Amino acid sequence: MTGTSSPAAPAARRDVSVHWGELGGVFVEQLPAEVRDLLATACRVPAQYKAGGLGAKPVRVDLTRVQGFGAWTNVPTGFEPAVIAACRRAGYQVRVTGYVPERLPPPSPTRLIPGLPDTALLDLVRAHPGGVVRYGPTVDPVVLVAQVATAWPDMTVAVVVRRVADTLRVRDHLRELGIDASAASWRYRPCVGDVGRVVVCTPPGLSTDGVNPEWRQIVVAMDAVEMLAARDQWCFSHCARARAYGLLPAAVTPAPVERDLIAAYFGLTELTIPAHGRVERRAEVEWVTFTGGVRGRPTDDPVELYRRGIWEHRTRNARVATLARRHAALPGAAAGGVVVMVGGVDHALALLDHLAGWPVVAAGKVNTTGLSPTRITALTAATSPFSRTSSNAIVTAAAMPDLDLTGISVLVRVDAGTGLPPIRPSQLVVPADATPLRLVDLADRHHPGFRRAARARRASYTARGWYAPGVDQLAGRIDRFLATRPVLPRSAR
Image (cartoon, rainbow, N blue to C red):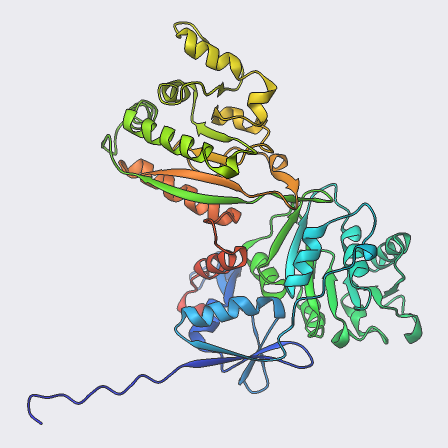
């Protein structure tokens, strides 16, 4: 009819089927191309330009494997949450079918190795089918494997190492810890009956008779980075039923492509064990926006800008004092304290007008010439051990590395700096049942330089794994993984 338009056809429903196989493995039917792009990374390889000269060009690396005639895509079990999140981000509805693995039963206290209570590691193995465990210099990775093997004595475990000599070393160490382990490699091929519940092998050693990688229930890679070779990945692909975990020293920083490949096989769940029985304390970031005050020009002198816009800004300092007193009055802060981190002594002394009675912790000696007795008393009180550990205090950024954070529950950051707070890794070593550190960050909006600094801090917190209160750690890592996918040129796709 004239003047009318026919109704638009309803949009076709887009579904993606994720199937857990009965014999292990996760398969995705008809994985869309746009989702496959989200699940890819890039590495740079040498290339010669047509005009002459050498350079580096990006090459696409898919993090999934296509099975059959392209209808099914094989996904490691630990990578399944990222695949589901990528499909939903692209607008697809996900249907999960098949045999979804359940949480493992809790280990009996009598099964644990005495004196080695790494409960956080056992909780990770219980709840997640894959993960990366980073360990400190004082942690013995073989002991971590022994705890997993001891906690679930009915499950078969394969410990994968890179070198033949390491199979014997790790096997002997496990035997010293009371675990009947065997070794298998191209050089040492035990009889079928000699391969026990726990076997230490190289990637090609998984094919040894009796190892049966298809039926192993737990696979632990002693070095996650060393297992990224194409041959090793092909060997790993036969452990389809296993819960896969990779160990990695905390001091090692993988390259971006290595980090993506580790996430693709072991998953995005991550745990840091700086010492046996300890974990790395995580922080929960609470953002508070401050918009009023001085509006300086982008070309202002930085020192003068921070003096007018941060240190001596009375409205801002009053807002900081309100935040500090509010968190100090919360019930959760009774067992700890509140620390206000400032950029320097000038800002700390300016805050004393609003936080009377709070001690000031500064690095080194402070020139007190011309200061009032009240301010001199505040600086003197900061030398007592009690004020450094469990009371409320104003702390300069230079003094943060020497502060004991075990008794601190809230850190109010108001220095308007960039990056992470100046905290040493040893300051975040806590028992597994410790409460998270609440990090309250004042995001200034009254100058372009302050806004850039706030964005830089937010990016640093996300990269560190510090999210808002209530955000699941795994969900936060998945969101960051999908948001940091490299953009490949059309010729590299």
